[in-house]
Length: 391
Image 1: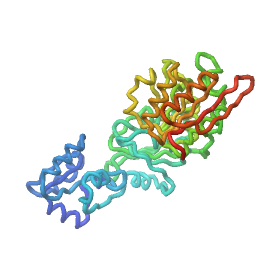
Image 2 (image 1 turned 180 degrees about the vertical axis):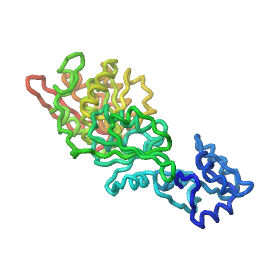
Image 3 (image 1 turned 180 degrees about the horizontal axis):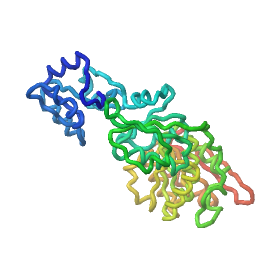
C-alpha cells in the first residue's frame, strides 16, 4: 500500500480483509486502514525486534494479513517473511514502490537507475555505487540514514556533482517532492517516511587511476617514505587476487594506501583496516576522503587485542606492519581465514623474510609466489604470497 489516508484496495483485497481476523503492519499502516478492519480484529505491530513479531504470529493457528508499504518484494517485508516462514507466504498484492512513485512524480525515467537500500543496512552498496560513478541511484532511507546524512557523506568524500530528489509521504494528498543541491540538503530535515534519488549533473566517468601516487597522500608525521610505493602496492594487490574475494583485511595500514587502492579498484570488497598508532585515524580519514574512497572500516589499537571474530571474516590479508610479532599475526589471520585464505607480505630484510617463511610453514601453508623489486634508490623489497591451499 501507499500513504493515502483513504487507501483504495482491489475488490479481492477488500474481501480478504473482511475474511481475516489477524492483521499486522506498522503503526502508520493501522492508522490508514483501521476503519476497514472487521469487528474483533487483532492487530500485531511490526516493530523491532522482529523475533517478537514472529512469536506473536505463531500464537495464532490462522492466517495473518500483513500491510506493508510499496512493493513488498522490493526490499520489502515479504522477503523477510519468506525467510522466516518458508513456503507459508501464500500471496502478495503489490503497490508501486516509493522510488517508482518518486520517479513518476518527477517524470524521471528510472530504467537506468541503480537501487540501494539504507533501511537498517550498511553503507556498502551505496558507497560502491558512488565509487563506480553510477549516474542515477535510488535510495531507500530510514530515520538514521536520512537525506541530510546521505548528502553529507557524499560531500565529505568529494561526490559533489549530484542533485538530490527527495520524496516524502508518497502516494497520497500529503505527498511532497524536493529537488535540491547536496549543499542545501545537509541543512534540512524531511518528514519520515521518505526516499531519494541522486542524479549526476554532469558525466561521471569511472576515473580512479591504476596506481595512486604516494606523494598525493597525507603522510605520517611528514615522512613521505612511510608508505607502500606505488609499484610495490600494485604488485601486492595483484597477488591478493581481490577480484575473487569479498572481504579484505589490511593489517598495519599506516597512511591507508593499500586499503584505499583496494577499495577504489574493487568496490565490491568489504575492506577492514588495522593500525596500532593513534595517528592512523587522521591518516585514514584524510586520505580516504582525498581519494574519494568511502566505506573503509578501520580500527586503531593492538591488532591481536581486537574483537576480530565480530568482523567480516577475511578472505585475503596484507600485512603492512606487525610490531615484531609477525608469527602471531600470521597464525591469527590463518585461524580466521581457513584453508582458502591468502596472505601477502612485503619484506625489507633477510631476517623478516625468513621469519615470514617460517611462520607460513608453521601453520601448514605454502609460499606460492615470490618476487623481488627495487624502486628508485630504495632498498629492494621481497613480495611474498602465501595460501592455505593451491587453487
